[in-house]
Length: 232
Image (tube, rainbow, N blue to C red):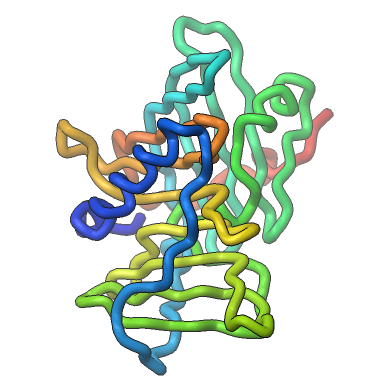
């Protein structure tokens, strides 16, 4: 899995902007990229080779719901993942399959869970993989050791980004979905107050947050074929 601790300092200014916007329930404006123009190509942020199993704790909150529990992610390079979520104290759960650019929640309990998950590109970003739909234009700027990029379509006023990514080295540290000049959703990698590696998804303007805190990650030989079945 990606090393997330290095991203903490890069997200400090963003966290302040998000906090201010959240107080008014208005998504923050997508400000111009920092740094200087560069022709450096975007890194190939991919899943680790082979098969990886990650154990995590999760916490979801919005104005009407607050849930937490345990989970695991089973990752198979290059583009397959299964995420299992168990609600605390055995109060149910569900799973999601990420197969390429498709996010599936095949069972009834999983479909109930599905509404709280981000879309496939953002969920892939949470797992360290950069997999956004291609855009006709990409603006890139180097900001210290962070490469920032807008991927979108050109307009008469410049590039209107659909996705905004930040990389440190070859590691994807954040991905934002931009619409109407505002940041609508974001996934960030960092560390929590206890020093544990964590991933946070926020749907800005609706106070919806999903946080995954990594407990353990290890390479394994393989997974049973049955985990990929879209059982009903």
